[in-house]
Length: 309
Image (cartoon, rainbow, N blue to C red; front, side, top):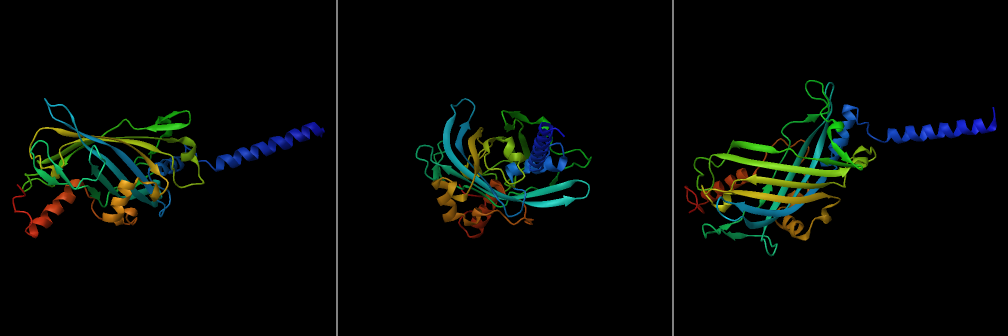
């Protein structure tokens, strides 16, 4: 064989080997299982024991018809989670996430953690109850294939620009029975009504990389429109709260800003770790946590049976 041809064959073989090796280290996004694994890296982790720590900060406004919006709080929040990895003979690989989350209400001028808050509409000073929900778990596992066999994750439907994946644009429209109904009308009405919005952006190459079970470089934006928080004691006053935040996935616990890290270490230490992957407890919300808080104080005689006035 001509030496030049031989050299060309050798180089071509080497190039093909490198290409094959590279492909083996990337998730095949056309395969339902691998597409699902790539997607799960973003908000969780593909192996139990590896955690995802997300943090966000932002502002909260009041909106009342006929009144200028007010900047009533700043907020900082975090969610720490892990996933139980599952397998189904028909649906393929699956996950169930378990998590805990904290969100602090801060003074809008000083960013100090609020312990009490003077309600500007009622002039009453109330005790602030920060978000401390444990757990916040997925109610059921998700699998690579739906019940009808269709792939759960379709990467062709995602917006990808210059190697960055952009996700969001949908909304969680929440409307369900409020656990504070009935004997808790001092605090809240009969239905919880809110809309939540989440967007995220992250590198496609990191999502496809098989060598890691998590993706670190992800930024998010979270917003919520909801009724008044129960501890504000707004009762039936017309109006809503608007949360508007930005955040990111952090590499380690120490990356949390001092204000939220110090508060968690002092008052919510279990929130440094997610729940165990087999956690079967019902989920917490601000309203269920507040209900327990009221019930405990009523039982101890700190609050009257009809609720504080």
